[in-house]
Image (cartoon, rainbow, N blue to C red; front, side):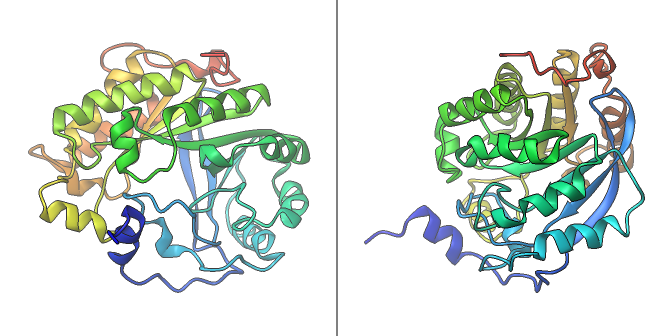
Length: 319
């Protein structure tokens, strides 16, 4: 019987990192151009919990996850641990290497405690797969009594590539999830990949821009463009086969500059370890330009966003 794509992805993996279910595996304050049009700190907590069940081709977040559901009370303990060590901010990201509304990752019994911990923030941002979006998202927002924002991985609007990523969803699944979140008055953040496997440099730019257009049309208020990296085993295999080459940093700058000129919403480039993608004469200069685009949200091609005039983060777009 032929090996499935999921089996190939899992068999190519290396070891997980050792994690403590009672502590987040990382946390930090990071500046982000907010929905109020200001550069503000966001308290980002990388929660330790059970791995996402979808096993996407490009994902390496499983390295900091558990194989079993964490004990009840562990997630609130992790949040308390991080917030007691971070300087106060107006916004919080509860990122969990998967899906906040997967009950095997975040026990539903912990929701009331979590809601109490984050109720004082202006914005609570969580990650979730479109197929895990349900009435539960609205229920949690009601518990928090503050503005919930759900970050969805569209990755790409190119259906054949989406299937190849083992995302186990369609563009229709994504649009349906966005429709439901808008109905619940929940803000939408979207992740877009730059140059997934099987994509040329020019195709990577074009498809990222097409995907950003779709995300904004579906009501996203903010999108993050992520250069596809290696490091999870299967990506190295694809690189050896000639099916994957890292994107250029100049391509990320092109995508950000173009998308910001539309004025549809905020657009960020994921700058984690992006020096590896540098293709200019001075990587530091490239990184400085990208950092400025992230922090100022002003494209060389146009005026960029003006979120101060849209405190709800362009929620009406595509509704």
